[in-house]
Length: 159
Length: 428
Image (cartoon, rainbow over all chains, first blue to last red; front, side, top):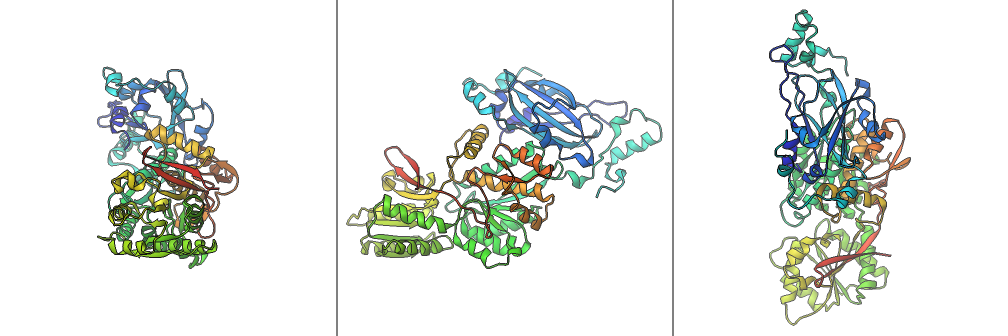
């Protein structure tokens, strides 16, 4: 794994949210896999959208990713990166495409990823990997993290 | 495929919840009690196996680079939602230990663990052993990104087309032999070359081709001496070469033996300066380490397939590599990214993990809309739309011929002790 620490930080642990039925927590743990720690440090927000899918529509991610600024589906959150640690994905009520677009502080999309998941309470972790966009490297080289920057320094007190 | 009753896929907890919901006790609170709606096989990962030298006797320094390039392609595909309806790709890696027997055993282990195709090995000897013992008989696609021996072309040539399952994204040595002789003659200006080669699936066939290529230019080798890879001493072989008084030595081996040979040559008396000429196998920083003394390889020249071509596709690849790993591309990393990328696109194209379907689909990615590194999501989307794509890779076009080979341009490399680095120019 490229960045285990980042993965741990950004695994959405999903605090149990009960709906009145003992033992049937509604938490959906989502693990967002950043390429490396630097990628986290230059990220600002993550837009998370859910698109309901059916059994015949499970290839939908590639289309969503290649459609500029997909705005359909349900925007379930525009989450500050450090807050991903305490963010809980809502139960979408069935199979979904989860589209995550990560923006930097100038609102440029620098990372993106999508995953199909059959989401239901009590299922295991939904794993989603991010990949650099065309703008990522230019952003990194234009404004790299300051020397000594780390996840602890940036996010240590949040969430 | 999806006709099984939904309840059959429910976990015990979810099943209990559903039954409660059915009983009307919690009909509206049921969101907390739903279970899966898709059959488990629909969302299981697709497993690919990679057999690479991570420890062992010569290529272990390069194996991790090859693996990382493959993982880059896997990350790109997974970030695009995976293949075959949202199934993630899982790459499991076996260590060949730079040993053909171990390589075949590891390939078998990975297939037993569910791998539907094999990437690797790095060495030609390992790739051949895997193909002949495992992937060929099991009809499972295999793609090497670094093996260049003509023995692999010949292995496919000896089979009916329907039984061929080996591919590679590095070009075969038929092309490299010509390049080596061109470099030896035109760059190193050799007039009395000798050939010192390891006697295995890599060195043997390449020796034959180089000898023929020299003959085609009217040059006769003053000595042609084989040695056993990993031998404890090369004194006898070096003595035979020295007796022929060459002005150049074409050395066909991997860095560990090359280091031993260079040091032994340096210690022999009286001193006999020669120009060393190598191939892709020595175009690695491992050579510097194995030589131990940079002066021994100062001016060492050689050839290699152009794995860092001046192509926009290569730039797209290297940008992503730098973004994820923070490093520039090493030799053959582009080929390894391509091997993984085209394999996953072929699985998507095939709509199946069946070995023959994947094999056939590898030939279908050569015409249509161009898809390049960094745009694999677009390739998946087009395949989903039943449109044809042409994968144009980081290392070249990646258009396989009937024997699973690709063509490539070549470069001339040279090591400089003063700059402590390799330089590279295009071979024209």
